[in-house]
Image 1 (spheres, rainbow, N blue to C red):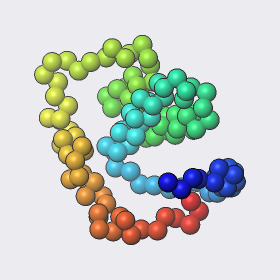
Image 2 (cartoon, rainbow, N blue to C red; image 1 turned 30 degrees about the vertical axis):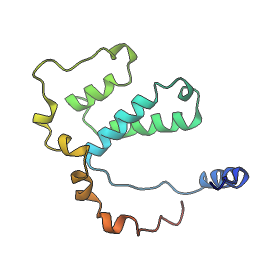
Image 3 (cartoon, helix red, strand yellow; image 1 turned 60 degrees about the horizontal axis):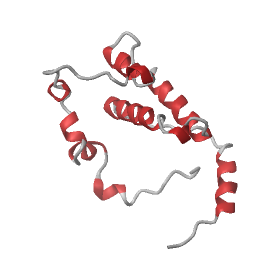
Image 4 (cartoon, rainbow, N blue to C red; image 1 turned 60 degrees about the vertical axis):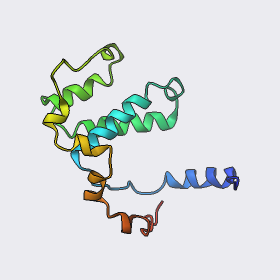
Length: 130
């Protein structure tokens, strides 16, 4: 296995800070998935004081603000920031998959095929500024 050049990595990381923000388009379901996964990762003890962790949490909170604060989606996402709410559970018979058409597909390839053509995905050059 080729060993990474950590000096070059540090140099590139410093240069990245001067680049313009990246723009992305996310389906709403992907936004919720990203927020909830950042919430989960933010519970890791080493992420508490980590600079990247702070960036990830700040980004997830910005994404959460795309949803109406009065909506149930926002309210449930808000629970993810509250460790006292970790005991929150879905009541018996509250089958989320029944209400959210894509949840079942999300674990498989079907939903990704809606947004990414697998044939083209491996042939795409990254943006110049990355």
